[in-house]
Length: 149
Length: 149
DNA sequence: ACCTCTGCTGATAACTAATATCGTTTAGTT
DNA sequence: AACTAAACGATATTAGTTATCAGCAGAGGT
Image 1 (cartoon, rainbow over the protein chains, first blue to last red):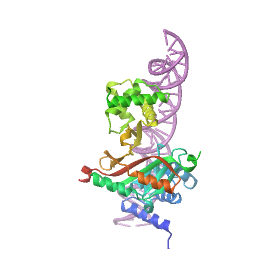
Image 2 (cartoon, rainbow over the protein chains, first blue to last red; image 1 turned 90 degrees about the vertical axis):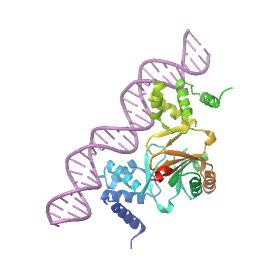
Image 3 (spheres, each protein chain N blue to C red; image 1 turned 45 degrees about the vertical axis):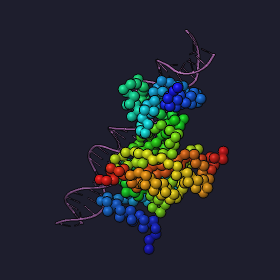
Protein backbone atom coordinates (compact mmCIF):
# COMPACT_ATOMS: atom_id res chain seq x y z
CA UNK A 1 0.00 0.00 0.00
CA UNK A 2 1.25 3.41 -0.94
CA UNK A 3 1.36 6.56 1.12
CA UNK A 4 -0.68 9.67 0.50
CA UNK A 5 1.93 11.75 -1.26
CA UNK A 6 2.69 9.00 -3.77
CA UNK A 7 -0.97 8.55 -4.38
CA UNK A 8 -1.49 12.26 -4.91
CA UNK A 9 1.56 12.49 -7.16
CA UNK A 10 0.23 9.63 -9.24
CA UNK A 11 -3.06 11.44 -9.65
CA UNK A 12 -1.22 14.44 -11.00
CA UNK A 13 0.85 12.33 -13.40
CA UNK A 14 -2.45 10.96 -14.60
CA UNK A 15 -3.77 14.48 -15.03
CA UNK A 16 -0.75 15.34 -17.18
CA UNK A 17 -1.37 12.33 -19.40
CA UNK A 18 -5.06 13.10 -19.73
CA UNK A 19 -4.14 16.51 -21.07
CA UNK A 20 -1.55 15.12 -23.51
CA UNK A 21 1.45 16.30 -21.55
CA UNK A 22 4.34 13.98 -20.94
CA UNK A 23 5.38 12.86 -17.50
CA UNK A 24 9.03 13.85 -17.58
CA UNK A 25 11.65 13.48 -14.84
CA UNK A 26 11.84 17.27 -14.54
CA UNK A 27 8.10 17.55 -13.99
CA UNK A 28 8.24 14.81 -11.38
CA UNK A 29 11.13 16.39 -9.52
CA UNK A 30 9.54 19.83 -9.43
CA UNK A 31 6.21 18.45 -8.28
CA UNK A 32 7.87 16.47 -5.50
CA UNK A 33 9.68 19.60 -4.39
CA UNK A 34 6.32 21.22 -3.73
CA UNK A 35 5.17 18.20 -1.74
CA UNK A 36 8.26 18.74 0.42
CA UNK A 37 7.57 22.44 0.83
CA UNK A 38 3.91 22.57 1.73
CA UNK A 39 2.96 25.93 3.19
CA UNK A 40 5.73 27.80 1.38
CA UNK A 41 5.20 30.23 -1.47
CA UNK A 42 8.08 29.64 -3.84
CA UNK A 43 9.19 31.83 -6.71
CA UNK A 44 10.65 30.38 -9.90
CA UNK A 45 14.14 31.35 -8.85
CA UNK A 46 13.72 29.84 -5.40
CA UNK A 47 12.62 26.58 -7.00
CA UNK A 48 15.60 26.73 -9.33
CA UNK A 49 18.00 27.32 -6.44
CA UNK A 50 16.52 24.48 -4.40
CA UNK A 51 17.02 22.18 -7.38
CA UNK A 52 20.72 23.05 -7.66
CA UNK A 53 21.66 20.63 -4.91
CA UNK A 54 20.22 17.42 -6.33
CA UNK A 55 19.25 18.34 -9.88
CA UNK A 56 21.58 21.02 -11.25
CA UNK A 57 20.89 19.79 -14.77
CA UNK A 58 17.38 21.29 -14.74
CA UNK A 59 17.40 24.67 -16.48
CA UNK A 60 15.71 27.84 -15.37
CA UNK A 61 13.49 27.95 -18.45
CA UNK A 62 12.17 24.51 -17.63
CA UNK A 63 11.35 25.67 -14.12
CA UNK A 64 9.33 28.60 -15.47
CA UNK A 65 7.59 26.39 -18.03
CA UNK A 66 6.77 23.70 -15.51
CA UNK A 67 5.40 26.10 -12.92
CA UNK A 68 3.23 27.74 -15.55
CA UNK A 69 1.98 24.35 -16.75
CA UNK A 70 1.06 23.19 -13.27
CA UNK A 71 -0.66 26.50 -12.60
CA UNK A 72 -2.79 26.04 -15.71
CA UNK A 73 -3.71 22.56 -14.60
CA UNK A 74 -4.60 23.97 -11.18
CA UNK A 75 -2.00 21.77 -9.54
CA UNK A 76 -0.20 24.86 -8.30
CA UNK A 77 -1.74 28.14 -7.35
CA UNK A 78 -0.06 31.19 -8.83
CA UNK A 79 0.05 34.30 -6.70
CA UNK A 80 2.00 37.48 -6.07
CA UNK A 81 2.66 39.38 -2.89
CA UNK A 82 3.59 42.73 -4.44
CA UNK A 83 7.29 41.93 -4.67
CA UNK A 84 7.03 41.85 -8.46
CA UNK A 85 7.61 38.15 -8.78
CA UNK A 86 5.15 35.31 -9.09
CA UNK A 87 4.98 32.68 -6.41
CA UNK A 88 3.48 29.21 -6.42
CA UNK A 89 2.15 26.78 -3.86
CA UNK A 90 0.54 23.39 -4.03
CA UNK A 91 -3.17 23.81 -4.60
CA UNK A 92 -4.32 21.48 -1.90
CA UNK A 93 -8.02 21.00 -2.50
CA UNK A 94 -8.57 20.16 1.16
CA UNK A 95 -7.73 23.72 2.14
CA UNK A 96 -8.98 25.31 -1.02
CA UNK A 97 -10.19 28.50 0.53
CA UNK A 98 -7.23 29.76 2.44
CA UNK A 99 -6.42 33.44 2.40
CA UNK A 100 -3.08 35.13 2.82
CA UNK A 101 -2.26 37.48 5.64
CA UNK A 102 0.58 39.69 4.50
CA UNK A 103 2.52 41.57 7.17
CA UNK A 104 3.39 45.06 5.96
CA UNK A 105 6.09 45.18 8.63
CA UNK A 106 8.29 42.16 7.93
CA UNK A 107 6.66 40.84 4.76
CA UNK A 108 5.91 37.46 6.26
CA UNK A 109 2.94 35.66 4.72
CA UNK A 110 0.73 33.51 6.91
CA UNK A 111 -2.50 31.80 6.13
CA UNK A 112 -6.06 31.69 7.27
CA UNK A 113 -8.51 29.09 6.17
CA UNK A 114 -12.26 29.56 5.97
CA UNK A 115 -15.28 29.58 3.77
CA UNK A 116 -16.88 32.82 4.85
CA UNK A 117 -16.46 34.23 1.41
CA UNK A 118 -19.30 32.02 0.23
CA UNK A 119 -21.74 34.59 1.59
CA UNK A 120 -20.07 37.36 -0.33
CA UNK A 121 -20.00 35.32 -3.52
CA UNK A 122 -23.66 34.59 -3.14
CA UNK A 123 -24.47 38.27 -2.79
CA UNK A 124 -22.52 39.08 -5.93
CA UNK A 125 -24.32 36.29 -7.78
CA UNK A 126 -27.73 37.64 -6.86
CA UNK A 127 -26.89 41.30 -7.48
CA UNK A 128 -24.90 40.97 -10.70
CA UNK A 129 -24.73 38.76 -13.77
CA UNK A 130 -21.17 37.74 -12.99
CA UNK A 131 -20.54 33.99 -12.58
CA UNK A 132 -17.79 33.52 -10.01
CA UNK A 133 -15.41 30.59 -10.40
CA UNK A 134 -12.60 31.48 -8.03
CA UNK A 135 -11.33 34.21 -5.77
CA UNK A 136 -8.12 35.50 -4.29
CA UNK A 137 -8.05 37.42 -1.05
CA UNK A 138 -5.13 39.17 0.53
CA UNK A 139 -5.24 40.83 3.93
CA UNK A 140 -2.62 43.41 4.78
CA UNK A 141 -1.67 44.29 8.34
CA UNK A 142 0.79 43.58 11.10
CA UNK A 143 1.77 40.17 12.39
CA UNK A 144 1.99 39.68 16.13
CA UNK A 145 5.68 40.48 16.56
CA UNK A 146 5.61 43.52 14.27
CA UNK A 147 2.50 44.83 16.00
CA UNK A 148 4.13 44.63 19.43
CA UNK A 149 7.13 46.82 18.65
CA UNK B 1 -18.07 78.34 -4.64
CA UNK B 2 -15.96 75.56 -6.05
CA UNK B 3 -17.07 72.23 -7.42
CA UNK B 4 -16.35 68.88 -5.85
CA UNK B 5 -13.42 67.81 -7.99
CA UNK B 6 -11.56 71.05 -7.42
CA UNK B 7 -12.20 70.75 -3.73
CA UNK B 8 -10.95 67.18 -3.66
CA UNK B 9 -7.90 68.08 -5.73
CA UNK B 10 -7.10 70.90 -3.34
CA UNK B 11 -7.26 68.50 -0.44
CA UNK B 12 -4.71 66.31 -2.15
CA UNK B 13 -2.41 69.25 -2.91
CA UNK B 14 -2.64 70.06 0.78
CA UNK B 15 -1.77 66.46 1.60
CA UNK B 16 1.32 66.71 -0.57
CA UNK B 17 2.44 69.88 1.23
CA UNK B 18 1.81 68.36 4.63
CA UNK B 19 4.19 65.55 3.73
CA UNK B 20 6.86 67.93 2.39
CA UNK B 21 6.24 67.09 -1.24
CA UNK B 22 6.04 69.85 -3.79
CA UNK B 23 2.90 70.55 -5.75
CA UNK B 24 4.31 70.47 -9.27
CA UNK B 25 2.47 70.93 -12.56
CA UNK B 26 3.20 67.30 -13.43
CA UNK B 27 1.62 66.06 -10.22
CA UNK B 28 -1.43 68.22 -10.82
CA UNK B 29 -1.87 67.03 -14.39
CA UNK B 30 -1.56 63.35 -13.48
CA UNK B 31 -3.98 63.69 -10.58
CA UNK B 32 -6.52 65.45 -12.79
CA UNK B 33 -6.21 62.67 -15.33
CA UNK B 34 -7.43 60.22 -12.70
CA UNK B 35 -10.36 62.48 -11.86
CA UNK B 36 -11.29 62.29 -15.54
CA UNK B 37 -10.94 58.51 -15.66
CA UNK B 38 -12.84 57.37 -12.60
CA UNK B 39 -13.59 53.65 -12.76
CA UNK B 40 -10.64 52.84 -14.98
CA UNK B 41 -7.55 50.93 -13.90
CA UNK B 42 -4.66 52.63 -15.62
CA UNK B 43 -1.12 51.33 -15.99
CA UNK B 44 1.87 53.68 -15.98
CA UNK B 45 2.24 53.34 -19.71
CA UNK B 46 -1.44 54.04 -20.31
CA UNK B 47 -1.14 57.20 -18.24
CA UNK B 48 1.95 58.19 -20.20
CA UNK B 49 0.17 57.64 -23.50
CA UNK B 50 -2.87 59.60 -22.40
CA UNK B 51 -0.58 62.49 -21.48
CA UNK B 52 1.03 62.57 -24.92
CA UNK B 53 -1.81 64.60 -26.37
CA UNK B 54 -1.77 67.56 -24.06
CA UNK B 55 1.42 67.14 -22.06
CA UNK B 56 4.07 65.40 -24.15
CA UNK B 57 6.79 67.05 -22.07
CA UNK B 58 6.08 64.79 -19.09
CA UNK B 59 8.55 61.91 -19.03
CA UNK B 60 7.78 58.27 -18.36
CA UNK B 61 9.99 58.20 -15.26
CA UNK B 62 7.96 61.04 -13.79
CA UNK B 63 4.78 59.09 -14.42
CA UNK B 64 6.15 56.07 -12.56
CA UNK B 65 7.42 58.25 -9.71
CA UNK B 66 4.18 60.15 -9.41
CA UNK B 67 1.96 57.07 -9.41
CA UNK B 68 4.13 55.48 -6.75
CA UNK B 69 4.01 58.64 -4.66
CA UNK B 70 0.24 58.90 -4.83
CA UNK B 71 -0.07 55.22 -3.99
CA UNK B 72 2.02 55.72 -0.86
CA UNK B 73 -0.15 58.63 0.13
CA UNK B 74 -3.21 56.45 -0.46
CA UNK B 75 -4.48 58.85 -3.08
CA UNK B 76 -4.29 56.09 -5.66
CA UNK B 77 -4.81 52.42 -5.08
CA UNK B 78 -2.18 50.18 -6.61
CA UNK B 79 -3.32 46.82 -7.95
CA UNK B 80 -2.52 44.14 -10.47
CA UNK B 81 -4.75 41.90 -12.55
CA UNK B 82 -2.22 39.20 -13.43
CA UNK B 83 -1.04 40.91 -16.58
CA UNK B 84 2.31 41.61 -14.93
CA UNK B 85 1.89 45.32 -14.76
CA UNK B 86 0.71 47.52 -11.95
CA UNK B 87 -2.48 49.48 -12.33
CA UNK B 88 -3.82 52.44 -10.40
CA UNK B 89 -7.17 53.96 -9.67
CA UNK B 90 -8.37 56.86 -7.60
CA UNK B 91 -8.84 55.70 -4.04
CA UNK B 92 -12.29 57.11 -3.54
CA UNK B 93 -12.95 56.84 0.16
CA UNK B 94 -16.70 56.79 -0.44
CA UNK B 95 -16.43 53.39 -2.11
CA UNK B 96 -13.47 52.15 -0.14
CA UNK B 97 -14.49 48.53 -0.08
CA UNK B 98 -15.04 47.68 -3.68
CA UNK B 99 -13.85 44.40 -5.04
CA UNK B 100 -12.83 43.54 -8.57
CA UNK B 101 -14.61 40.98 -10.69
CA UNK B 102 -12.17 39.78 -13.31
CA UNK B 103 -13.59 38.00 -16.33
CA UNK B 104 -11.38 35.09 -17.33
CA UNK B 105 -12.99 35.17 -20.77
CA UNK B 106 -12.44 38.71 -22.01
CA UNK B 107 -10.32 40.14 -19.20
CA UNK B 108 -12.75 42.92 -18.43
CA UNK B 109 -12.65 44.16 -14.85
CA UNK B 110 -15.86 45.29 -13.20
CA UNK B 111 -16.55 46.25 -9.66
CA UNK B 112 -18.69 45.30 -6.74
CA UNK B 113 -19.03 47.35 -3.62
CA UNK B 114 -19.82 45.98 -0.19
CA UNK B 115 -18.69 45.64 3.37
CA UNK B 116 -19.32 41.96 3.91
CA UNK B 117 -15.66 41.36 4.42
CA UNK B 118 -15.94 42.96 7.83
CA UNK B 119 -17.28 39.69 9.17
CA UNK B 120 -14.35 37.78 7.78
CA UNK B 121 -11.87 40.29 9.16
CA UNK B 122 -13.48 40.03 12.54
CA UNK B 123 -13.14 36.26 12.53
CA UNK B 124 -9.46 36.53 11.65
CA UNK B 125 -8.96 39.05 14.42
CA UNK B 126 -10.48 36.77 17.03
CA UNK B 127 -8.79 33.59 15.82
CA UNK B 128 -5.31 34.93 15.13
CA UNK B 129 -2.97 37.63 16.42
CA UNK B 130 -2.87 39.33 13.04
CA UNK B 131 -3.97 43.00 12.96
CA UNK B 132 -5.66 43.70 9.66
CA UNK B 133 -5.31 47.14 8.10
CA UNK B 134 -6.44 46.56 4.54
CA UNK B 135 -7.50 43.88 2.14
CA UNK B 136 -7.62 43.17 -1.55
CA UNK B 137 -10.12 40.78 -3.04
CA UNK B 138 -10.32 39.55 -6.59
CA UNK B 139 -13.07 37.36 -7.94
CA UNK B 140 -12.47 35.39 -11.10
CA UNK B 141 -15.24 34.15 -13.35
CA UNK B 142 -17.24 34.97 -16.45
CA UNK B 143 -18.99 38.23 -17.19
CA UNK B 144 -22.49 38.11 -18.60
CA UNK B 145 -21.59 38.15 -22.28
CA UNK B 146 -18.74 35.62 -21.95
CA UNK B 147 -20.95 33.33 -19.90
CA UNK B 148 -23.66 33.30 -22.56
CA UNK B 149 -21.52 32.07 -25.41
C1' DA C 1 14.77 -4.04 -30.25
C1' DC C 2 14.81 -0.38 -33.37
C1' DC C 3 12.74 3.57 -35.83
C1' DT C 4 10.03 7.55 -35.89
C1' DC C 5 7.83 11.49 -34.50
C1' DT C 6 6.38 14.87 -31.56
C1' DG C 7 6.96 17.14 -27.47
C1' DC C 8 10.36 18.54 -24.09
C1' DT C 9 14.67 20.38 -22.57
C1' DG C 10 18.75 23.52 -21.65
C1' DA C 11 21.20 27.49 -23.04
C1' DT C 12 20.69 31.85 -24.04
C1' DA C 13 18.85 35.85 -26.52
C1' DA C 14 15.10 39.00 -26.33
C1' DC C 15 11.56 41.41 -24.13
C1' DT C 16 9.03 44.26 -20.73
C1' DA C 17 8.02 46.68 -16.62
C1' DA C 18 10.13 49.15 -13.39
C1' DT C 19 14.00 51.51 -11.10
C1' DA C 20 18.45 54.03 -10.81
C1' DT C 21 21.42 57.54 -12.46
C1' DC C 22 22.63 62.11 -13.56
C1' DG C 23 22.83 66.70 -15.19
C1' DT C 24 19.29 70.35 -15.46
C1' DT C 25 15.26 72.78 -13.89
C1' DT C 26 11.99 74.53 -10.62
C1' DA C 27 8.88 75.22 -6.42
C1' DG C 28 8.89 77.17 -2.18
C1' DT C 29 11.32 79.92 0.92
C1' DT C 30 14.18 83.72 2.43
C1' DA D 1 15.70 88.26 -6.82
C1' DA D 2 18.50 84.55 -4.90
C1' DC D 3 18.96 80.16 -2.89
C1' DT D 4 18.52 75.18 -2.26
C1' DA D 5 16.59 70.87 -1.88
C1' DA D 6 13.38 68.51 -4.44
C1' DA D 7 11.73 67.14 -8.77
C1' DC D 8 12.33 66.69 -13.57
C1' DG D 9 13.36 64.34 -18.43
C1' DA D 10 16.31 61.37 -20.83
C1' DT D 11 18.22 57.30 -20.71
C1' DA D 12 20.97 53.34 -18.82
C1' DT D 13 20.29 49.46 -16.00
C1' DT D 14 18.06 45.75 -13.59
C1' DA D 15 14.95 41.90 -12.73
C1' DG D 16 11.62 38.72 -13.96
C1' DT D 17 9.86 36.37 -17.55
C1' DT D 18 9.19 34.66 -22.29
C1' DA D 19 10.81 33.29 -26.99
C1' DT D 20 13.94 30.87 -29.88
C1' DC D 21 16.17 26.90 -31.48
C1' DA D 22 19.07 22.90 -31.97
C1' DG D 23 19.45 18.57 -29.73
C1' DC D 24 17.26 14.91 -26.81
C1' DA D 25 14.00 11.48 -25.30
C1' DG D 26 10.12 8.65 -24.48
C1' DA D 27 5.65 6.50 -26.17
C1' DG D 28 3.80 3.95 -29.98
C1' DG D 29 4.24 1.28 -34.20
C1' DT D 30 6.65 -2.16 -36.94
